[in-house]
Length: 371
Image 1 (cartoon, rainbow, N blue to C red):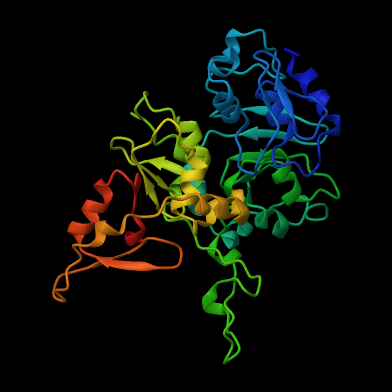
Image 2: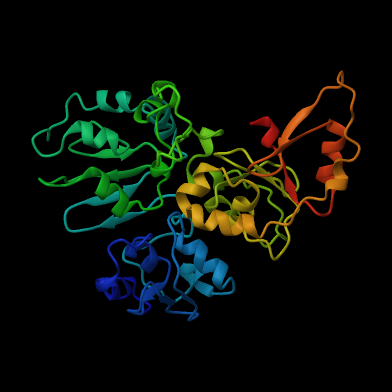
C-alpha cells in the first residue's frame, strides 16, 4: 500500500456522503479498511475512524501518530504518489487528474491570486468575469459564480476565490457546487459567504407581536468573519511563523480549528468569532476549547455542529464568582461587558477583567468584549 494509486482504489465503497474526500485521505498515507469510515496508514499502521467536515487528513494523521515517517517527510519514505510532489506541495500547490476534470491548486501567495481575491470577493463581481465564457450552454456562469468561481479568461478554466482551486474541462450535466465540494472538500467557501449571497436580518421583517426568534423558527443566521484574510486554512497557517515549538498544539491543528497566531507567546484567535485562547496545556483539544469558550462561533457550529458544542459546554468548568467580588459600584467608572456564559453577562471593570484573565481557573483569553 505504499503506492498512492493502490490506496485510492481501496476507497471504492467509501461513503459518498463522507466528510472528507477519499483522494485526500489516500494522499495522506491511508487506505480504506472497508469498515465504516476506518482508514489505516500503510506505514505506521495508525487507524482513524471518525471524520468531520473541515478535517485536514494529513493533520489528523500527524495528530494520531506524530512519529510516523510519512507525516514527518513523505518524500523520504517508500511512498509512491500519484504525481511526484515536493515537501511543501501539501501546503501550497498540487495537481490531480480525474476522468473529466484537471484540478489544480494555485499558491495563495501569488500576487495574481491575491489581487483576484480582492476583486472577486463579491459574487456579482465574479459573475462579471464570465463575459466571454464559451460554455454557457453547458454550465451557466451564474452557477459557477455562486459556487465561488470566477473565469480565468482561458479555455474553460475557473478558479475558486477562497481556496485557489482551479477546475476545467466542464461537461454537460456538471454541477459546479458538487464539483467544488468533491475536489476541494476543505475549502472554506462553505463557511465564508459573500454579503450579497446571504439573507440578512436587516432584510427580514417578522410579523408584529411574534415572540419567536429566528433560531426557534429553524432559520440559521450567518455573519462574515472578523478577519477575512484568514478565512482560508492556508491563510491562517501562514500566520504561525515563530509559533513556540514546545507546544503540543501544532500550527496545522490550530489552523484547521479556525485559529490564527496573534504573534505573541501562545495567543491565538478565531478568524470568524475573534475569540482568543492562550495558556495551552498538553491535554487541550483545540476544537473542544474553541467550542467550550466560544459556543456561538458560527465556524464551530458549521464544521462540528450543535451537538458537539453542547457536549463541550456541559463539560466546561464553572467560573469562580469570587473573581468578581471587587466589581465597583461607582457609576462613573468605565465598564466593559463580557459574556461569561451563553445566557448571561456581567459588568466588570478593567481591573477585574485583568484579574479574571490571570486566574489559573480560566485559560481562555476573552476577546468577546471586543466583538
